[in-house]
Length: 198
Picture 1 (cartoon, rainbow, N blue to C red):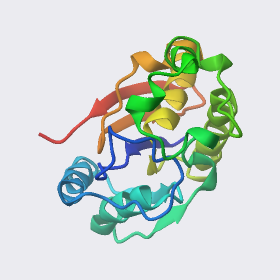
Picture 2: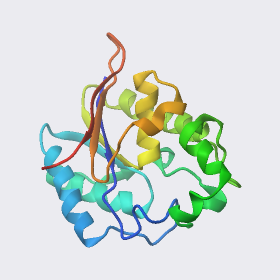
Picture 3: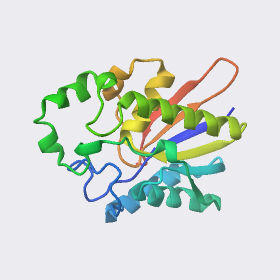
Picture 4: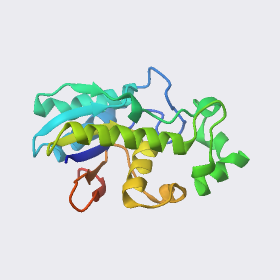
């Protein structure tokens, strides 16, 4: 089956300051475009059989840059979109860190449901199902999926066989590439995590 390259979107002006979530109209920062080109360089070879992306703008912009050298168009894959953070969406990370529930996000994420949003477990389940659907559709192709930090960490946790409660131990930087091989023989393998262009 396929080799899947999970690309975190490049930075926006709000990365690291605000929980942007699914808010519209948040595109890449100027340096974000350069970092997205670095991710594209990491994925220049072998040729990508397809490029998929979360529907969120920052991912679409990153995926378009990754897809260009391969003559591909980025296809939207809704189930790898950002976690639905509900009422937390749009708030600053500084304000969220003061909440009692923040400790649950950090130490017990499998129990966390965002107010008026989804649980991290639900987000993991939909994203893993989407990745497996892509792998089944693409045989032995190399495929890129542009998504978000928590989604990528949740997917990696699944394939590493580790509990979701440990997913915060995985570093997924902006414009990084993490690669998994979903093969029938021997089961899935996590090949690399958080590769970044020098």
